[in-house]
Length: 233
Ligand code: B12
Image (tube, rainbow, N blue to C red; front, side, top):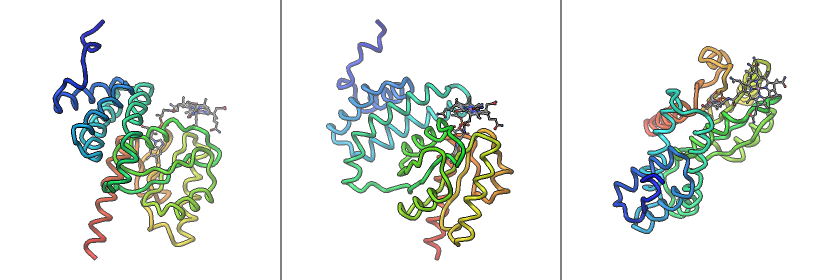
């Protein structure tokens, strides 16, 4: 038995508990994360504080190590799953307290493509960063995207493709948005292993994101810029 097994979460002070949550998220320990989330709430923490300081804080470390090749997909999925446990407790409370929303993203893998691991990771990391996610799943024709963007009043469209044969379909979606005069109403982010920055630019996306951590940073940047523009006039 390691020392870890002897830790009683409720006996840690707030600072120690948050540090322990960072470790537990990193290790994908869902039960521990849920218990610690409850403890912080009982101690009077606001749900939004628990989300940003404990869960998102921990997930940022996971995201950075994933980006830097220190953590790999299975570990990140476990961490994301642990985080989801904590979020399942906070979600109803956040809805009540009206925590500031980062924005809403519609995300899906394009028509003809069934790869969804990367998309799911992006969705989870974005959710962890405070974005609301509408996940359309795999194999999406242009109509699915357009319908969801309008229905959900989304801010961001995210498209994923893992095949060289399906990535051109992203351009079909963006071109259709242009035809309908709605392209500039949304921030369009694209990703998937075969893509690159040049491709993103060529098809008229706002940005190509090489991984989930970059997706979160990029989305935050664009949303902040949008808010500033709106404030300016
Ligand atoms: C797992 C996998 C599968 C699984 C998919 C399971 C699933 N549920 O997703 C299965 C076995 C089903 C599969 C099927 C096929 N696959 Co496959 N697959 C892979 C593999 C090994 C890993 C992909 C993956 O999940 N990577 C891990 C994730 C985390 O990385 P990621 O997807 O790149 O996502 C990250 C970023 O790209 C970015 N990102 C991704 N999406 C988005 C979206 C947005 C909005 C943003 C901002 C960012 C972003 O962030 C993510 C997280 O950091 C790749 C090899 C590879 N190296 O990519 C081949 C690969 C993609 N597959 C390939 C092929 C050919 C196929 C098949 C056609 C095989 C066949 N003959 O049947 C079928 C396609 C079926 C179809 N119609 O889609 C080829 C594609 C070659 C090409 N040039 O097009 C690859 C490259 C393998 C190879 N070297 O040949 N595959």
